[in-house]
Image (cartoon, rainbow, N blue to C red; front, side):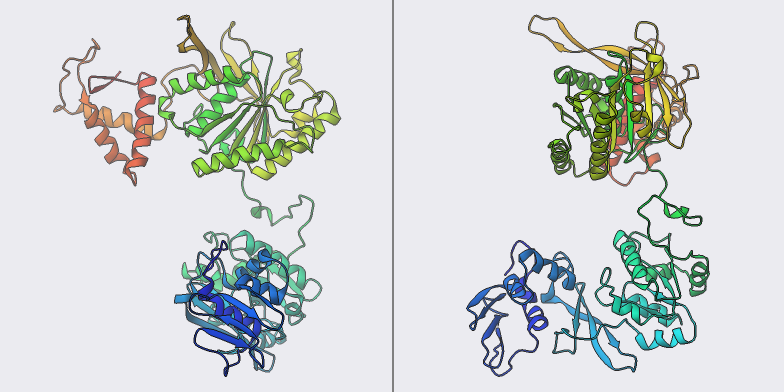
Length: 622
């Protein structure tokens, strides 16, 4: 029997009943039901079609296993599920009908008397019990694991390691290092545990995950004022969710652990302020890039230009490259879905999307999504953030990936009734934008207007520039030469980087009157630095590999001579199939799907840049 919680209640009912109710009445119990109480007035079915249900004949209460848990601990079904998860782990990993005991960890008092045991079962589950037949630990004294050993170590002024699990304690103990933990895993440390470590030199080693860091902080705070010294040692080369046992399995020694512990800084309580102490700077993760060297993940940028200055074309082009995973002005990208909130001119924006897709046919199916509506990020009580979160959830349901870039086009449409030169309005807008960034972990790009005096930068309050991590200004006009996107502010980087481009007209359809429907698409010029003359096209590593494979094939005297190719100057070709097979062998990618994606993008870009020519199944270097 199961419900929406995902647990197989029939499989875990007996263990749960014993833990909640203690030992059953052996005289009145049967193979498929347990009776509790002197007269057996509480019945728990553990077999048959009723397995996972209970009836309390004294109170007239009955129901399923969650109801039994609530009957004993109070609360609702949600609280009962939390109780199950604390003791049995997630329903995906627990299958108690086939569980077997793989380890028993006894907890003793100071004199070596056993108080209770933690039992590990496979599939992975942890239970606490007094004995093999008594799964009730209510009222049992709270003590840390290996209490006699750590009491002796403290008396001898030896440091004591605190880890998250009994397995890790035993591993350290086998190497001669005093260690302890609490029953129940991360987050279950109590002040009662700390009392036994008075005057100790403590080294806390968290597992390498968020729960581990939170557990280390909780333990350290509990020991504050009790332990003589507290250090937190994070093993930085651990895999995700790895522990100290994994660290030893990777070939590290106990001597190395003591060396690292000696260099670990003394713990300080986490500050509500963004403080980093000398020696702890490595704990701050490095900046992660959305567009390498330009835009960081989970940051905020502003792109601004005069009306009609190309800012939306620029933002669309950059965002679509991110969604498609195609290098942008020679910058590597973090490929992820993009949500573009187009608050004005949505019909025209659809034409721009089509023009871009026609130019980059290798990007077909890229997760670039336009939402055509304005939202109110001025009023904290509006549903704007929830609306965006709903859109993000829909994108994730479709793609399986989280949105990494949100474009808000334009700022004025995102703060209806507000004035971008009014500090109070801008402050409210930025606070809501920051909340959106924090809740989505996406990069937020704001498209904004420049002021009437373009040399003074973007329109409105200086708070906008101060708040942004990156500010990009579009300069020039399409009538007096290329446009320039200039980085006016770069967090922890160099300002002044330029990206030059033209806006090329592109036919995207035909109207009812037969006239062409056109839009524009950004056409990049030169390199990412924007200061070098246009010369040999810049290729990615894989595109260069594809070009070299073709050159090597063409240098072979045995290649097919050109036959029927329309290009007059071509004297030597190979078949596209020959070229594709050579590239496949050179790249040696893991699966066909990965190769097809790389192959189509490389071939299309080389053809678009006129590096190669293709006709009637033949390919050559142009």
